[in-house]
Image 1 (spheres, one colour):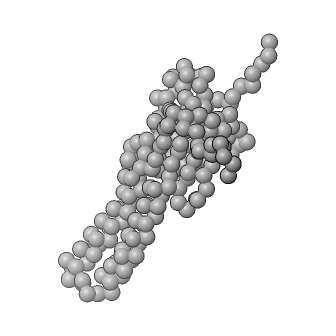
Image 2 (cartoon, rainbow, N blue to C red):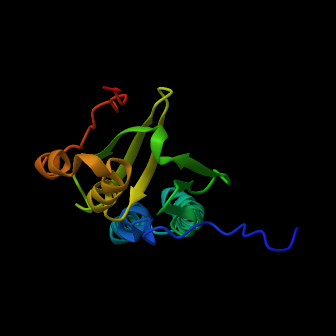
Image 3 (tube, helix red, strand yellow):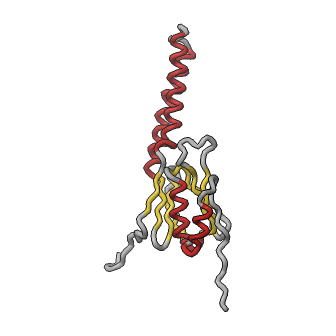
Length: 183
């Protein structure tokens, strides 16, 4: 490496958005509760030594650790970082790559929440790019706050429009950037 070259990511406003623990570990708890209650019902019905009880223990005993490992890996690896010159997306396990997106390439930013909204703040951040691609980062802890902060950075000249549109519950679509006209 050459001396004097700074290869660190510029900090920008320092905003980092992380994954929601409740959104990732909630399904693990639900599966564990299901298998534990099913096993409890089987034992209370007097069939605790039967094949169904063993099947319940084996499937629950295999499913819960794998789901827990997957939730931990996603919780550690999901991150959206806003810097002064680009937006850095870590979509989480199993995707190992980080994507850097220039602010000028962002065409629209929206969020999508789970059907039941549990947890209510968690959601998927969807970023539409100028080339037509859409990149989604799922299970963010406060997707609406992430959307609002990123919109202020991506569209700094449209603060009034952003303020008017932030109450939209399902997401906030942004208009296509208009080309500067010389007059």
